[in-house]
Structures are given as C-alpha cells and as structure tokens.
Length: 205
Image (cartoon, rainbow, N blue to C red; front, side, top):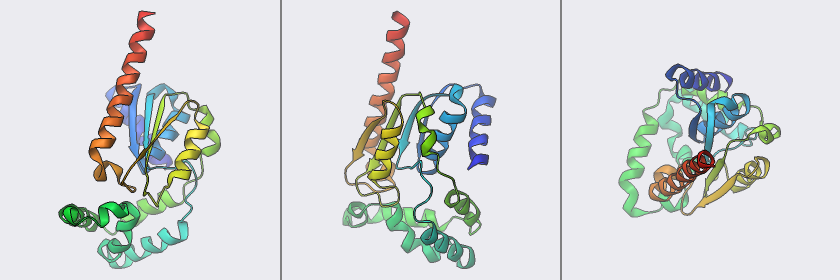
C-alpha cells in the first residue's frame, strides 16, 4: 500500500497537476486517504467509493481465495469473487447477464500473479486513527449492497473526517461505478461543481 501511494504522489508531481481532485474506488480510496494524510499539498478534494480506512476484516477468507488463484488461476475463484464485487440486484437481474459475463471475463483475464497485489491490500494497516488529519472536502459513497466494505465502514470514515458527506447508492455492491453509473456520476459531478463554486466564492471575497 505504501508503494502504491508513493507512486500516486510521484505521478501527480511529475505531471505537475497538484493539488488534484482524487477519486478512488476500493483500493483507490485507500490510496486517496493515505495521500490526503501524508501529502495534503497534493489533494484538493476526495471522492471515496466503496472503501475503508480499517484493516481487512475478511483477511482469512480472501487469503484463501488468493492462494487458490495463485495455484489454479483466477478463473477458479471467479464464482466466489463476483458476489464480493457486485450487489445482489445486479447479480440477479436477467437484463444484465451480458454485463456480468463481461465483468467475469475481465476478472478471469487477470494473471495469477495478482495474488501479490491482493496480499498487499489484505495486509494493510488501519489508518482510521489518522483520518482527522484530512482537511480536504470529502465525499464518501457506498453501495447499499456492498458486502466487502459495507456501510458501517463508510460511516466510520464519515465520522472521522471533518465535514465529510455520505451518499448511499441504491442497488449497488462494491462495484457501484459499474452497477449504478448514472447515480454515481451525477453525485461526483455535483460534488465537484460545489468545490468549484466554493473556490470562486473565496476568490470573489
């Protein structure tokens, strides 16, 4: 996790983009919070989707999946991984069978060496105690059917980051951006518009 966070900071600096609006889902959200804590100069605002600031609560379960993926390939564990990634509404909707097939194929196409990245995520340390250091405006979003990082974990983030706001995405699991793209996109757009208005008001004053 430290390496990925350092890489993100280095990329922002190399491109000369900071401070940025950083939007991250799951692992991306963990990176976003770490950046906002350690490099606040690079962050203008945060959008945190289906993520957590805590250590992995399901480590043994996902470790077992990681071992199986390493030994037998990602396709072997795909049926067990899909319910962790997507909500029951999406998984049970006959009209979305094509999307589910595409997502499954994308999952299977991952190399078995993905276990190394998975273990890095599973072994992460909690940063919940440091969230009070985050001063950037923050929007937290979570699918109401997310079983990997459920709403109570989002509530903990909102309770720890000053003035963070929470939006619950209906009919979505851990992959809310894919399951309910219109809702998620509209919420992010409204949040970013509000940040622009805040900057304009401050400049006018």
